[in-house]
Image (cartoon, rainbow, N blue to C red; front, side, top):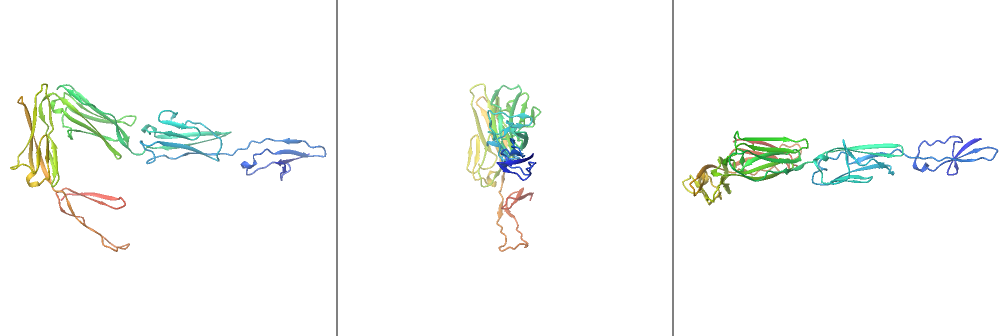
Length: 387
């Protein structure tokens, strides 16, 4: 007998061999097998299981800045081609850890992993694998974090101390790129003293840890301390006072600049914390022959409509108590004239290939002057010219 193959009761071209060079889902029905013989021919039915290799991808890949930020929820989704009822080895894995649903992470069956809010620890390689019958496929996506403004995860608090003991102030910031933390005391850089030790390092988790240690604290160390974390995405600031018992003390103020025609203000950086209910008075005085123009003398010295002739010079702040204790420091004010620029313009009807030029002329203003050229598309060049 000679076997003949049938597909849906239709004889195939080859009498003995079933050959399907381009198998598609339309060929999935089971062929029937029969034979030619003078005798009654039995019909033999063959069952076939046909499936196609599938393609498996994760989307998006890669997932990076600015798509992924710390302030927005984000998802990673897998897709297959052709669409098939797959068994996927979810949860996805962020090598070398396995992700499970809970808290910030939600795994949606057979579709995606959803993270909200995003944490710096979420960066890395995400891998997902799927099986269908005997086929296996997997794909991965590399996740990088976009820029995120700094956040303070630890802040120092206000303290009141007796003179003598050591004190430590600490700030911990996180962000992308890694932020830098700077410190000020009453708005000025920290004093240069062997009693001050400032340190900063990055932990294994990417947190920036910065501290200021003061040994044998003095009354002069009191004031408002500020830690500031800054990166390209933003800035975060925290301030708190350190109070130290002792007689009144006015911090050295050095030299500051005021802009002619604008309002200038400065606060007397006075430190005082009494054991008794004593009273302290703060007052400003000027070394100029005449009082400053339109000024207000309180703890804050405010000068409106600054002029060089009347307002430059030295100002003194004195803090005194009824008990007879006092301290005085001097502030030198330098009045600067803001730059005034002469307008410029390009010639009209310029053609491609023509030469063109303009001059940036400052007709008034005190050096140093910084010139900045910008184009409408955002490109710019910058250089400093000292006149």
